[in-house]
Amino acid sequence: MPIGINPLVDFAFKLMLASLGHERVTIHFLNSILGENAKIVSIEIENPYVGPNFEGDKWVVLDILATDERGRKFNIEMQTSIPPGLRQRLAFYDARLYVEQMRQGDQYHELRPAIVICVLDKPLLTDCDNLHSDFRLRDELGRIFTDDLQIHVLELTKLTVTRENLNAALPAERWAYFLLNAENLTLAEIRELFPEPEFVEAAGVLEMIKENPDQMSDYISRLKYKLDEGWRIESTRAEALREGELKGELIGQIVILQELLELTMPSRGDLSNYDVSQLKGLCTQLRLELRSRQTS
Image (tube, rainbow, N blue to C red):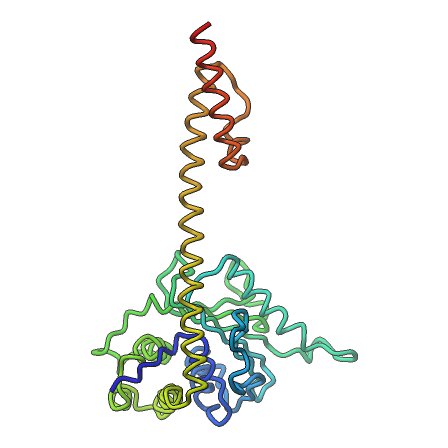
């Protein structure tokens, strides 16, 4: 029987990567994203899953905070939509993770790298097809000023790996495939496709959600919220698009009416700052004026 739990739901994602006793899953995930040069040996989960304490709280934060043996700070989050300002929010999280290390009497050289990892199942970066993007402080020549601030984005929609070539995939690609497909795989299939014990352990954590009524209730609650939130964001974008199209039509009509009336103000640039109701009012006013001139 398939696992039936989607690890892309933030509750399941956090339970899988931030449960005490399952730290090696988190270590494996982080090493897969960061690569061999940033090898992590041990990790401390700073905000582990501690039980169902957020029922009804739609704004609960289910990010994962962790520190490795070198003192590096990590923030890991799962996003199933692209809320406005996401890039700025990730930059803010990274800066805050870095700055909050400082205490009175600390020295700047004691600051440890702050690393944000955002997993997305919607595209964010439209100018490239990379599954994994690694952002740091660089100059125009690509020289890294410091590794202390890092933002890693894993865009699952850009995964090109299939079941047939999964064995040859990179570690980050294997995790992306797992996140996208674990819900519909059985534990036996996961053992076959992912011989690494960390994947089997991650799948076992997902399986346990079904066996725990409180966790299953939380999972369903968060799944429903994510679906509702995704619908709200897409509806808002669709409405904004429709409003933009309507504004464009109204501005076009106003410009034509101004030409017929031999008017030059307001300009097209000024009109772009009007809202729809203002444009409708001006359009009606100009039509009445044109009609008045034609009948006089």
